[in-house]
Image 1: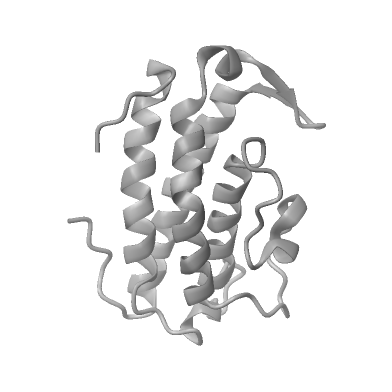
Image 2: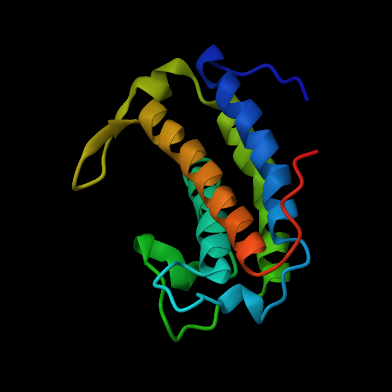
Amino acid sequence: METKTASSRVEGFLTLFDMQTTFFERAIDGISEEDAYKRLNTKANHIAWLVGSLVQQRFMMTSETNPGLKQTGEELFKDNKGIQDDAKYPTLAEYLKDWRMISPIAREALVMIDNKKLNSEMDMGFMKMTYYELISFTIYREASIIGQLALWRRLLNYPALKYD
């Protein structure tokens, strides 16, 4: 899908964003709700948390352009909350519905960001970074989480993630 971006600096990000939008859906395809909570006697984040965290990240990408939009599991993820051992997370179907709703909005925010905004600095309290650096990290983190979901698929005896 070819799209004219406000800044040529985000074109590569947009390509990754589009791929990861599709890969996310494939990564959770067929996973049972029971398996979504398995941690296989480790401290690893389970699928339910990974998926919700990724959905939350897409919502955060739109927080300036579309304030007030919230995912189903907002309370479980706001303020960068980590995994909560006894929490009941939304279903994978609920996350998927939120993903499908927010992804086009997040994509449009990415398309519209210009060089002035990319160069502007934000203070996150514990560190400062430019919006360009934040988007770089966000796109990297999406790929990382999708990779973790792909690994969980194999560990839980599901077919490998299909990239085609």
